[in-house]
Image (cartoon, rainbow, N blue to C red):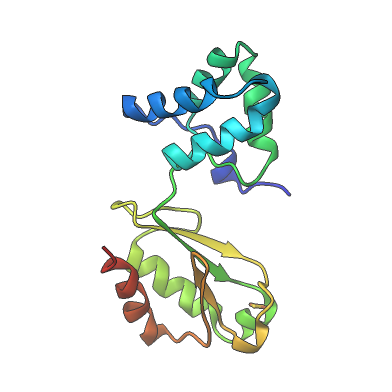
Length: 171
Ligand code: FES
């Protein structure tokens, strides 16, 4: 699967919290075959940092004493890994044919406008990341959006506020 351009760029996040690096190092220290566990380490790192900026990938390469290119190769190959920040909630907006003909474009416009982001972007408060996806297999409920693993069907432009509110008010 080819990653969207916004995800394939490496991203430097500036100074990341030391306690997160400590947590990652502690996890790595429990592994016997460190180099053979690269994918597990990257999963753990993404869980801790929520994304894999260049400096975290370099940290892992140094820690395992392997070429940085090897780490970059893995994170670029697997679409699961992202080197750009993602929000607490991921909004997946279906742009498949059924959703498209039932107004997904209007929903997309409204979401982008309300969140002030483009597709692939993350809101300034890091609450939402917006992704446009292909058919998610529930065409009968088109148009559809998913927020994390929760599906919202037959979405209307006027529903968007109350849907987003549910996630904004979460503690
Ligand atoms: S096209 Fe959107 S769920 Fe199938």
